[in-house]
Length: 191
Image (cartoon, rainbow, N blue to C red; front, top):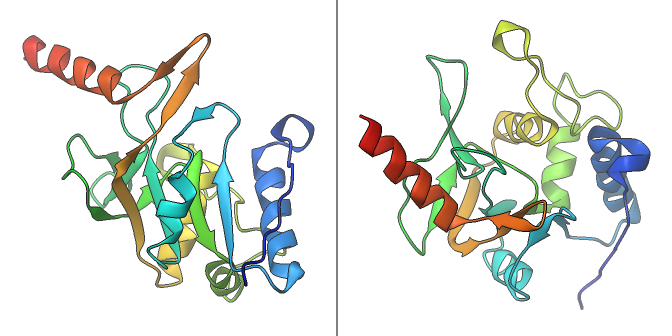
């Protein structure tokens, strides 16, 4: 039996942090929910995306979504200890489940088990799964990458299914793998 909870958490009404925290809290309190499928309203994806991400039975899996601006980096990253921050993947293996350290939440699946693990962290503030963590040089990490830092702190490996490529709306068009490849080619020519 699959249980489904679907909520409309408007970022316009509440802001990203409060909206995502409200969704996480509702899923934890529902008691019979196993996963939350996160999708932003400016993302275009294949109809089978979430069935594919859920098939892995991992605590957190994302697809690849691209930034809306040059250089259209993928919103999957590894931790860069030297910079004390995240560095986006420039290239990745195709059609694999890739371990990552951070990701955007425009397309993502998280288990309620993970939400409960994060609640057990010593510095967890009430309903604060997505509260922004101060970063180096006075710039806070975004709410989604702050969540990823907490997930890693809770001992959970994050993954990206590199076969799942979503598009991110930019006005009347979308950023995509094609934008990313063209931008990378332009950067290579400039070197």
